[in-house]
Length: 239
Image (cartoon, rainbow, N blue to C red):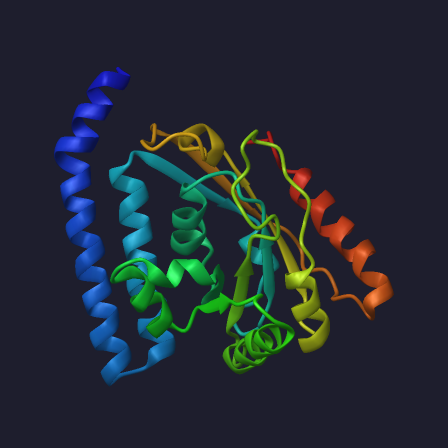
């Protein structure tokens, strides 16, 4: 059965998805140049991500969407199981947001430039000045209900288990007084983990937990990190 899926994926899905990716980038670049950057920077990519999942035979279900308000800005923190985390969050979160991305991703031909035009935030840790510039960019982006999505582990897991959480997302929540929303991604590791380059059909469950107040100060940050981590872990393996 898996052999049939691979035949379908490479002969049908891959050509369609490649063409769709290029078309989506072109639409976004034109749209952000002539119109509402907030709209064009999100909705075409949301459709692209949903189609990516559908053509990959990946079903995504969402729990807890009632926990968030579209008019409120949040810092979403999610575990990072595999490549399809991107598509599941982009396609099914249901809230306009910007990604917090590695600076190196800007170098990806066409896609990196499109992400820049979408207003996604590239993290530059090369110096204290660069870090401060990243924070200032984030502050400009996170207005009028615009939110931020961060993978606090910083990279996809090799084992399926969560790694240590970095403090960047929590520092932003502290500075901007934004609530943190833990998001559990369950099932992505089985579909396409870091060690595999071709997906398998499957199911992803996206669980949006209740918002958590940002840390009141630096001393409270470790406690809030643990709160969000426990919330994410509570829905792993429950799909």
